[in-house]
Amino acid sequence: MDVRSKARTLPGPVDDPSKLPKWNFDGSSTGQATGDDSEVILCPQAIFKDPFRRGNNILVICDCYAPNGEPIPSNKRYNAARIFGHPDVKAEEPWYGIEQEYTLLQKDTNWPIGWPLGGYPGPQGPYYCAAGAEKSYGRDIVDAHYKACLYAGINIGGINAEVMPGQWEFQVGPSVGISAGDELWAARYILERITEIAGVVVSFDPKPIPGEWNGAGAHTNYSTKSMRSEGGYEVIKKAIQKLEARHMEHIAAYGEGNERRLTGRHETADINTFVWVRRGEPRRVGAGGPRHREGRQGLLRGPEAGVQHGSLRRHLHDRRDHHPLQGF
Image (cartoon, rainbow, N blue to C red):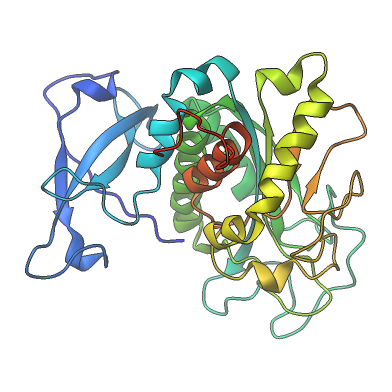
């Protein structure tokens, strides 16, 4: 994951992104523009409290545009925001709960923290949600991130140690619409900053260690008002059928490397498989009741606005229908 930032001074406090000035950066230095036309415009979209500078300081999520006002190719937020702003979508109040897994690596070796240098710990089993110096590695970093997200105003639901030692998870949501993507990106940025301070590398690779070790994903739990109401089970089934028809299109949008993780082993499904309820499946409806769908194929470093955009578009818009979202 490649997250960039810069800082500026404003004349006074601001709490509304629409009142913030646009800014720019050299897109040729980030691979987002050519050297002969390198200006990229930053458009403020969401504000969070700054857990590092504190006081009146803020963190601002921006998306990127060419000088002519067109979104640049890497701006996945633009189309997602258009869909979430549609009256039909607003009426459905789409909720997202995103489970973001990541791995902490030693900076000089790119090997998971707590692992013997060049070697391996004991087999998986005792590490998930564990406590103790022989089973849990990096909790101080994880807790610092948790507290920083709470301070920032991010709707962070919790944290836990994952199945592979040195791997952790935080949860964002439930949040409505585009705010879930903004909150997730803010939380990812804060994690990058905290691991920078700690001298540790955070990896968002879907399978950082080959072999008998769990990979990492960004499981996306999703529901609409119709799914959360009486008869929601049938709505979920219809939504899944629409998603199935565009499965490979979605996989492509979730980022590179998912085929290394979604093998049918290590608590994953095969990349092309769907089965009800069982934990290791890419899409499942939980045994607690038909109120939301969980997408377990999401990639750790996936463009979250693209994931949200795709799942919502497929559910509320079948290409065979003349739906008002057709142009999106």
